[in-house]
Structure formats: structure tokens, C-alpha cells
Image (cartoon, rainbow, N blue to C red; front, side):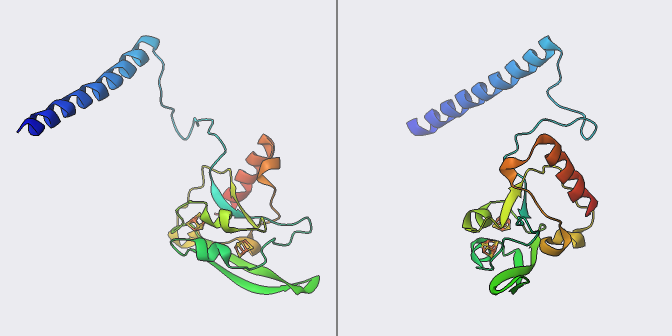
Length: 171
Ligand code: SF4
Ligand code: SF4
């Protein structure tokens, strides 16, 4: 019985703590007369570029870096990656992905595929606005449909904007 009332008391304290934060924020906003939301999509927030969509990485000659080791496919929980293995056009002994398809409808953006890749063949592109209006178009073939990519670490703000525009044109 004692535990029963103790739980009720602790629940009430937690509720009051939560409400105090809500009220503090509400009155703080009213006092400053500043909105904490933006009118999306006309206005956007300046988001930290640490998360985005999985993209293929290409070498200086425009070939995919993917050596078809299948590490990303084994690491992907929902199984949304498929690829086709082929020979490198300039070095037939070297394996290369001639198609690399990712179903964004299934992707959880968990980054496990990127972590599993030892060849820098895929990376998380800093794209936060990537809407699809047709589910059938969410299965994206990256090697053949995308042009040469960039190293995420070397992207300038202008390059990020260019990449966003390039990706939006694909859909
Ligand atoms: S981010 Fe996660 S769910 Fe998406 S393709 Fe990579 S491993 Fe699969
Ligand atoms: S993207 Fe990376 S991990 Fe996946 S198959 Fe290609 S080289 Fe292997």
C-alpha cells in the first residue's frame, strides 16, 4: 500500500516538473514575442549537416568506389540494398558495382551500411529535404542515375545546395 501511494506521489511530481517546463517555455515565448516554429517550406531551419540520405561515392574518373564486397547488404537491417557485380571497365580484374540500388521506402537511415563499407563507396549526404511523391520512385539506382559525387567532408555550403538541387531533379 505504501508503494502504491509513493508511486502516485512520484508521478504527480514528474507531471508538475514537466508542466513547469512547458509553462516556462510558453511564457518565455510570449514575453519575447518570438515564434519558436517556422513557416515551412517558405522558411527552413539551419540544420546541422550530420544526417541525411545514403548516397554513392565515385572516384575521380566517375566510377563507383564499390568493390561489391556485400558488407553493406549484410549490415542493412531491412534489406533495402541490391547491387550487380561487374568488371571495372579499365581494369577487368577489379570488381565494381555496375548497379547499386537502395529502396528509400524501406531505409531506416541507420548508417549501418556506411559504417560497414571499407571502400568509402557510400556516405550520408547532407540532404534533409528529399521528398518523394511517388512510392515507386523510391527504389533509386544510384550508380547509373547519379553523376559523380563529392566527399562529404569537402562540401562547401554552395556545393551542398547544388547537390540538393541535383538530387531534387531526379525525382
Ligand atoms: S541506412 Fe540503414 S536501413 Fe538504410 S540502407 Fe543503410 S543500413 Fe540499410
Ligand atoms: S558499398 Fe561498400 S560495403 Fe557495400 S558492397 Fe560496395 S564496397 Fe562493399
